[in-house]
Image 1 (cartoon, rainbow, N blue to C red):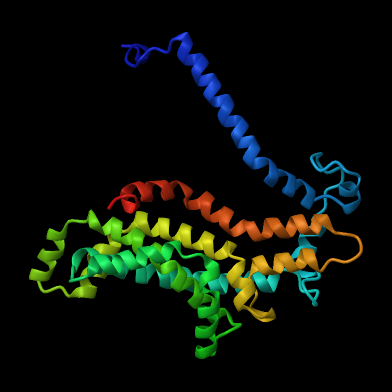
Image 2 (cartoon, rainbow, N blue to C red):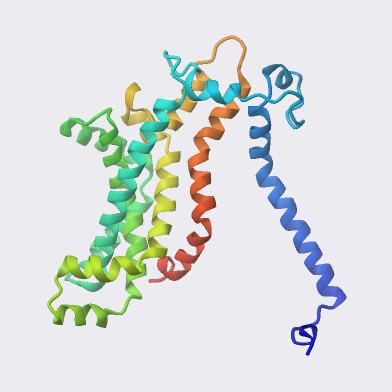
Length: 294
């Protein structure tokens, strides 16, 4: 039997509708990708070609010198260090901040769903409320806390800031995900003698892959792209990539090296692009698996 007779037949109206749908999707794809294409094209052009005025044209002479300059030679603030040390600072900040906030959020979600206690809904409501507090409101209290702890202007200080601010989101994600997890399985493990952390590490975490991916993408993107906390709570040696990129553009004098600026902007966006390309499809799957429930 021909497979063509098994499925629904497309009429002329369906073909036209699908063509219109694809055309609209292509227009939106071009619209959103055009800035990235322009940045990439101009990051491999000599400065003279950019100054000629045609930003969209492909390079006549390809060069990687703007990338090399943005990475290790460009003037950032008062030193010609390029973006390399600040790129390292961002990773030193992002990796522990994402890990700690994710682990604490998972434990919070575990407690709020499987170890119910009096007032747990109030605790969850307060943590949920923290998701909607604007960045600007916590600047002064957080500066006081960092000063008291003696970690103001350091990478560990930035890690603490992002862990505190991201904990509400990670708790929300894991709480909603674990709400659908069978409580009977937890009770059976308790009857067999498993303790709090044994159940957490052996039962809950191995089944939390989708929501872990969601949390990593969410937290990594927010922390890497943050500018306000980085500009407020870092000194010159601990500045993250976004602050350094701003200083790269602001500290240029004389002729603006736009090709170096484009290369620096792509460098700053590259880690988040890689995260989305590698694990983006799991993001929606993880959200549908539990983050929108509850």
